[in-house]
Structures are given as structure tokens and as C-alpha cells.
Length: 202
Image (cartoon, rainbow, N blue to C red; front, side, top):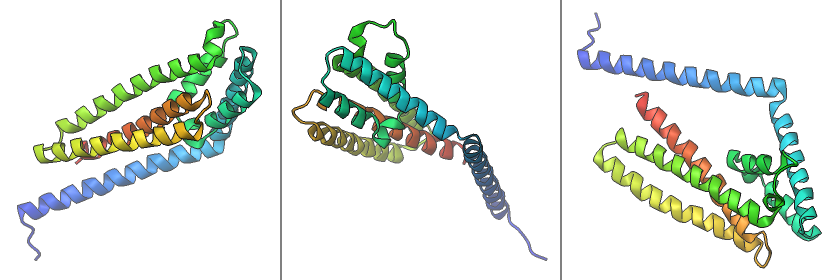
């Protein structure tokens, strides 16, 4: 008869628990995706977002922006990484949803200011996620995480600079850079939180 030692039993239980967790995670992910496909949620969300962008562009044009600047603005806001950014969506929605807002909100400066504020919130959320991940890591892993964060910050800045120079000489260059920082910070936050959840489940 096969004899199982205590360490082997522990490994078997751990493996079963891990497999069950993965199956549960995949099940939830598939359910979520099927629900969004069945209800056409992405299409409705995209349509609502694009409607808000067009509405805000009209208001910005009414407040002194040229047609060329409006076209550049719409091109930036329709970039996939920006369009999928919750922070960018909130900035657009907050500036286009009400007709009673001050005219200064619907300007390039207003957009930049709101984007910087959204970035500050997103960066704080990332720092919290990194801190939480540090708490469940060993000293050596924490040091590696800090190194990875330093390299990632340089990467984020490179993305922002690339977005800036794409509109060099135009009024939208700072806005494009700010939105690039915002969307990449949100992506990294989701990545860190996923790592934290994975380790916490071990």
C-alpha cells in the first residue's frame, strides 16, 4: 500500500487548493466576459465614452480651441490605452456631463489640471498597492520589487515623453503626456494588485 508522508500530504493539499483557486478564478473570469458579451456592455460603454468625448470637444471648441486642436484632442482621447483608462473616463465625464460647469473647465488648461489630479489619485493608489505587496514579501523580494518599480517609473516617463513629442509644438502635448502617465499608472496598479492577490492566496 502506498504510504504518504506528512510533507507529501501537505504538498498534495496545497496543490489541490491552488488548482481549485485557479479553476474558480477562471470560472469567474469567463462568467464576467460572457456577461459583458451577452449584454453588449463594451459597445455601450464605448459609445457613451465617445459621445462624451465629442460633447467635450464641442464645448472646448466653443471656448476658443481651433478645429485642428479639437481633432488632435479627439485623437488622443480615442487612443485605446486612454479610452480604457478609468481616470481618463472620469475626467471626460466630469467635464462634459453638465452644462452648468464653468467655461474654464472645458479648456485645454482645465483638461490638463483635471488629468494631473486624476494622476495624483492613481499614483497614490499604486503606492498603496506596492506597500501592501511589500508586507507579504520577504526582504530579498522587497528589494527586487523596489528595483522593478524604479525601472517601471523610467518606462512610464518614456511613454509620457513619447506621447508628448507626438504632439510637439501643439497645445495638447502636455495633456497627451499626462494621460499616458495616468493610463500606465492604472495598468501597473492592476498588475501589482494581481500579484498581491496571487501571493495572499498561497
